[in-house]
Length: 633
Image 1 (cartoon, rainbow, N blue to C red):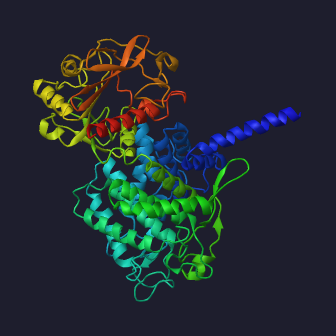
Image 2 (cartoon, rainbow, N blue to C red):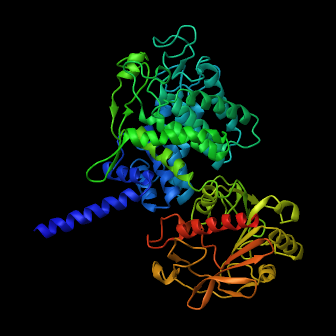
C-alpha cells in the first residue's frame, strides 16, 4: 500500500510540475475549465461570461490548443439555438451588458461559418440600432438607467460594434463608435487627475450624480479599466484613415499618463478607488490591475503607445502574480482580490460614495478578474519574442493567389490563405505568429515590383492559382522573376508554400524557383484516408537547423522538391526532399510543397496533440527573423 501511495505522490508531483511549466494564461484557462466545467456562472449570456470568453479566446489564439476553442463553443451553444435565437436574451431590456458576449459569436462564425452564430450576432446588433441614447448620441447603459452613460458600457458594446462593422462591411458605424468614446471622455474626465469617473447622468437628476456635472463621486478603478480596454480593442478595428482615429489615440495617451501616475509605487498595482491610495478602507484590486496591464502592453505592441509603458505594465504584472495569484494543493491557479459586482443607483440603492466602493468585498476567481488576468497574461507572454522582427513587414501575396467568393452578406471577398481568414482556409494563426515575433503583416494585391517589394523584409507566396480555381489566374512572368530575385539578392526572405500537383501552378512558379536551385515536382505524396493522421506524419530530426522545437508534424498531399546549388535540403522524409532553403546574395529562400501553416493544420482544432505544426510555424518565423538579422552582420 505504501508503494501505491508513493507512486501516486510521485505522479501527482510530476503533474503539478508540468502544470507549473505552462504559461500563467494557460494555467488560469485550466482553472476555468475545472471550476466552470459545465457552464460559466450566471443565468444568461452576459458580460460576466463575455469577459471570461474573451480571455479564453486570447489563450486559444496564443497557444493553438483546441480545447480552449471547444470550451468557448460549448459555452455559447448553451444559449444559442440552431435558428440563431439566444435563450434568456431579452432585447427590450436594452442593457449593454448583454452585448459583450457577441464578440464570441462573431469569432465562432468566422471560424466555423455556421450561420446560427451570425444570426445571433445580428440580434445583438439590432439592439444597438434601438438602444436609447442621451441627446448628444451616447448609449444609455441600460433602459432602467435613463440618460446614464457608464464607462463599463464602452467595453460592453463598442468592441462588438466595431468587430461587426469590420466583418460585415458596415464601416459607416465607426463614426458612431468613435463618438461614444469622445463623448464619454469629454464628460467624465477629471481635470485634476486625468482619470475618468465611473458614470455620468446627462440629466443630473440621479441622487448619486453631482448636480453641476452629473458625474458619480469616485474614480473607480475597474471602470477606467473597462474604458481603456474597450478603446484599445476598437483601435484594432478602426480604419487607419478614419478622421477620428487621432482623437482616440490622443484619449488613450492622456489616460495612460493618468493611470500610470496613480500606480502604486511599491506593488505596481492599482487601488479600488484610484486616487485615494492607501486611505482607510481602500484596497489593491485585481481585475482593474489586470485590465491596465492588458491595455498598456497591447497598446505598445500595436504601436498605440510608446515603449516606455512596458515597464509599468511588467511591474504591475509581477505585482499581480505576487499579490493575487495563488496555487492550491491540487495545483489549481486561483486569482484573489477582485471586487464583486459594482454599479450606481438601482435597488438596493448604490450611492457611488467612497464608502460604497471600498465596502464591496473581494472574491476569489470572480469572472472579471479571471478573464482580465488571461488577457493580461497573454499580452505579457507575447513580449518574450516581440523584438525579433523589429517591426519589419511580412508581405503576403494576393496577386498570384487571388481567389474570391461571396460572403454571407453577398459581398465578393478574397479568400484562401489570407491573413484575415479565421476558418480552415485562412492563415490567421500563421499571421499571429509573425505578429508575436514583432513583424507587421500586410498584403500585396498588385503584381510584385521593385518598388512595392522594397518595403517588405519577408514576401510570402502561397499556392499560386490555376484556372480551375480562378479563371483569371495570373502567372509569374519574367518581370516578376526579376523583381523578386533582385529583392532577395538585396536581403529579402522569400517563403514559398506551394501545393501538390493539380491544386497549384507549377510551370511559371518553377521558373522563379530555378533562380535559387529549387524545383517543385509535379507529384502528390502523403495521402491520408479520413482521419488516419499518421499517414501524413513527418518526423523532424533533433539537429534540424530550422525546426528546433517541433519534432513531429503533419503534411498531407504535398509536392516534393528537386534541388541543386545553392539550395540545401532542410527536411527529408523517406528520401524525399520536403523543405529546402537557399542563400541568394544577401537574402534567403524557403520552399515547401504545401501551404502547411494554414489554420486547419495549426489552430489546434483538428490534429491530435502529438502533431506540432504550430511549433513548426514558430520555429520558421524565428528562423526568418534570424535570416534578416544576419543580413546586417
